[in-house]
Length: 457
Image 1 (cartoon, helix red, strand yellow):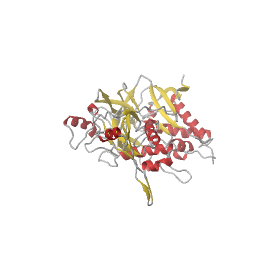
Image 2 (tube, helix red, strand yellow; image 1 turned 90 degrees about the vertical axis):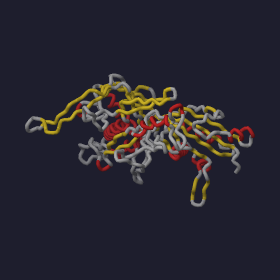
Image 3 (cartoon, rainbow, N blue to C red; image 1 turned 120 degrees about the horizontal axis):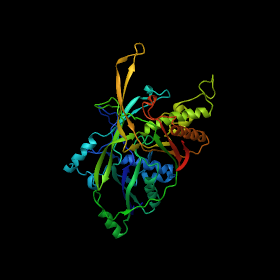
Image 4 (cartoon, rainbow, N blue to C red; image 1 turned 180 degrees about the horizontal axis):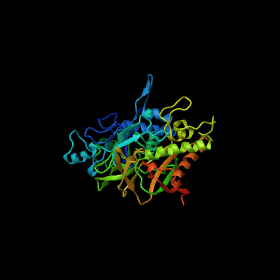
C-alpha cells in the first residue's frame, strides 16, 4: 500500500475538573502520584489518549476498521499502526510549553506551583456508615488543577481513503463521555476542547508535499497551514441531572487536616485560569468532591431499590433479601463494580459525577466539641476538638450524568436513583461530614434534561 496522504491535527484540551493520570509511583506522603514530564510539569501520555480514543470508537461501532487504523497483533499476524498520537504537554505562559532539556528561567517560578499538587483524601464507607477496612479504607492521590490546558498532536498516514475514520476520531474529542485518566466516574478528568486545528496533506501534489515537509513539529510553532476544525453537534447520549440546592445551615466536606485554629477544616483547592495567556492560580476555592456525593447517593439508591423490591430487613426469611453495595442490583447497574463474577462481570459505572467549586463560600465558622463522661457528667480528658464549617448563601449546582440503559431491569434502578436525588432536595439525605450533628442539610429542586421533575416547596 502506498501512503500518499498525511492527516495532522493539533488539539488543546482544558480540564473542566481536576485530573488524575497516574504515574504508578508513590511517595512518603501520597499513595498515588500524577504523571509528569522531565521538567516536573504534569502531562498526559500518548498511550492514555490512544486508549481512550480507541475505546470510544469501539463503543460507537467502528470495531472492524480499527485494526488497520490502530494496528494489531494476533499470534504471527499483525499490522503496524497508521496513527501516531503524541503525549499532551502542559501549556504555560504565553501559550507555550516547556521544550528542550533545560527549563527556561521564567518557567522555574511556575514549577513551584506543580511541585506540591493538591491531594484528594478518600475513604470507602460501608452500608453501616463507617470506613470499610476490608476494601482498603483510607487512601489518597494527587490531582492536577482544574483549568490546566494541554496540547497534543495526532498524525495518520493513509492513502486518501481514511478520511471517514479520521473525522470519526476527531469527533470523539467532542463526545460528552470523553474523559481522561482515573476516577472519571468520581469527578475527575472531564475535558473540553479549547481548539482543534487540522490539515490533510496530499503528498502526490507538489504544494501539499512541500507544505508537509515544512511543517514545524514544535508545539510552540504556529503552523499557519492548519485550519480550524468545526465540531458537529453530538447526539444526546446521556441523561443530565442537575441538583440546584440551598444549604439549610452549615456543611463540611472534610479535608482530613487541621490548621492553627481547629482540628478539622473544609477541603479547598486551587484552580487555574489563563488570563491573556498568563497562568493565574486561584487559591482557596471550596470544593464539593464528586466522590462524597456519589457515595451518599449510592447507599440511598440501594435503600430505595430494596424498598421497591419489598426486600425488608425486619422481615424474617425475607425474599428477596435486602442487599447493599454492589450486591444490590441498582448499585451494580448504575455504579459498576471493580470485581465481578461470571454471572455479574465487572464493569464501569453508568453514573458520572462532577466536582463542584464554590467561589464565595465562607469557611470561618468554628464549632467546638467535647465528649462528656456519662458517669461524672464532666468532660473526658483529651476529648476536646474543633472544626471549621462552610456557609454559603447562594444556590449551588451539582451536575450528574447517566448513560442511557437499554435493558428493562434498569427502569427500577433509575427510579431508585431519582428517588435518592429527590431525598437530597427534600432535606432527607444530608451530604458531607458531621451529618449527625446537623450539618449538610440541603433543600432545592431536581432537573432532568433541563426540565424540573421535583421542587421542594
